[in-house]
Length: 55
Image 1 (cartoon, helix red, strand yellow):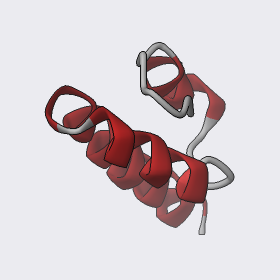
Image 2: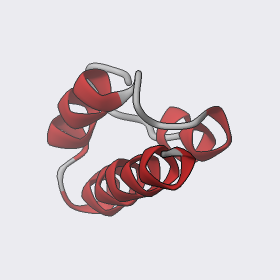
Image 3: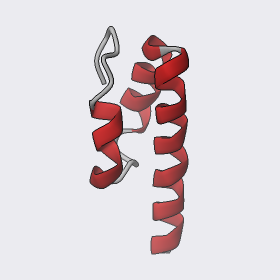
Image 4: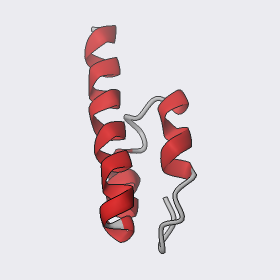
């Protein structure tokens, strides 16, 4: 089951990272909804974004 959690974390983290460059506001909203799933080591890139509403 651990692989599922890691895979889901990677999926959400990648989606947030991709959205940061295209639509920072939407990236911040996505991150807010998925933060609890994204593993701490993958959150650093999302936290580094300068999203208007913040992650």
